[in-house]
Image (cartoon, rainbow, N blue to C red; front, side):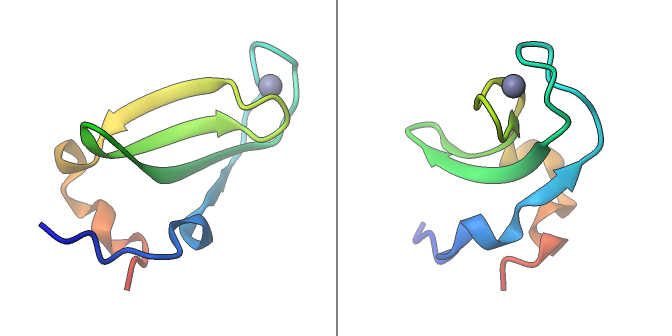
Length: 68
Ligand SMILES: [Zn+2]
């Protein structure tokens, strides 16, 4: 139950695309810890608009992104 993934920001993955809000091409996917547990989000790095949000557990292999 202990979240040992410190330094979560370091596993941010850049994604090619464009933000529907501001048109920026700077999108990134990364994990965030919220009250429902870990979520993998896709956010615009310019305006922080959330394009996607998915439960970490639903994604199985996501731990292989390099949390260690
Ligand atoms: Zn944006």
